[in-house]
Length: 324
Image (cartoon, rainbow, N blue to C red; front, top):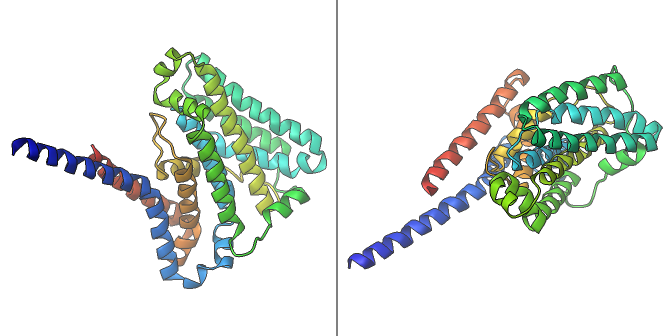
């Protein structure tokens, strides 16, 4: 009877652990669902094709910036320059990419190369990524101001057409978010090289013993961050139609919050592309529509976003304790 009792206890514990893990993985989706339920309760007319198109207008660049930050976090690093980099890309897009497309493409590709070099520098010199990227944030900001000293410029016509696309039945931001999540999830979670990239943050020593170059993985992660940062800046200008050197400054904290809200962790290479996109959508909806419907003044909206993030993280800590 004792052996049977122990076996039943182990099975019960295993089931509880599986439930806790499932709840932990579903937490980002539950957060998004709660925000949508609150919006539907406060303003039912917002739950429509036009409503979602309007509320998720800026969700695409936020999702792309969140994915960019996710690649860095997957390698146990942190990028404090992604917001100013998005602003720099926006200034290049609204000026050189429109007036001199070839020069604009070269500059954007060069900026991705700079990000790759940052990854190499951080790895080779064992520098803290927070310090290096914080310094680069001032560089990107200064270059953006030199390119566009005051708000202006104009997005290329093809970019305006793309971001203004209105498919039937499903709003374009939702389709774009699903596509971004699916592509990045497949590349990072379902391919052998994606396992290597995540392994650089999960167990770099084992990866090194297996013969894989940590330098190359760090370069690849930072290059992917630069690539998605470029896409985020271009998408942002395609929506706003013009640029400003400060247009992406808030994206640094939003991208970090989106990754963490989506189930990512700062160490261990534990990230979720789908969760990161869901976290970005949650922040996009909570940042303005939900708090506006609740008649919260704009000055308090940032604090309200922080409160939402703290609540979700507290729930995750409780679930993780249950899992352990």
